[in-house]
Image 1 (tube, one colour):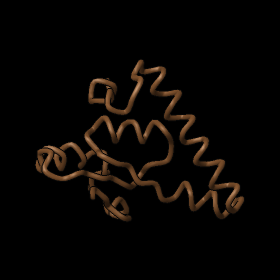
Image 2: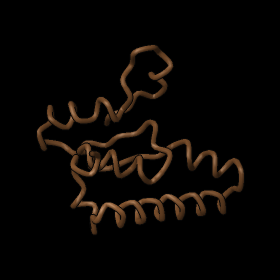
Image 3: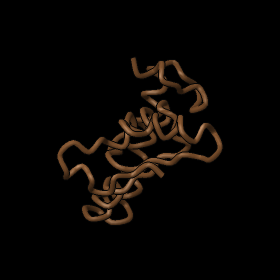
Image 4: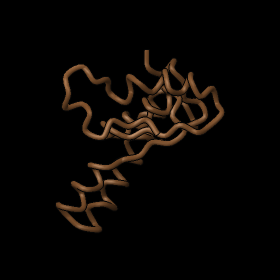
Length: 106
């Protein structure tokens, strides 16, 4: 799990996306790598997968949605997140998550 759980409040602490490639390289496929922190939209999910994350966890978006509109808000947020991921993948010309790699970041 690559996470900083509030660590960005300290000057100079790297974001999870900055730390992710080093962690992925260090484990060298021996264990799945999950990431959280700073995931706010579908393109953040794509970026994390492209950097080597096996799974991406979200926290604040669903909490904000829950606070604003309860269960309906969470459902709407998940639908929006899925739509953003599908749209970005189509624009990148990548039909599946397995087709995401660092080349989509440049």
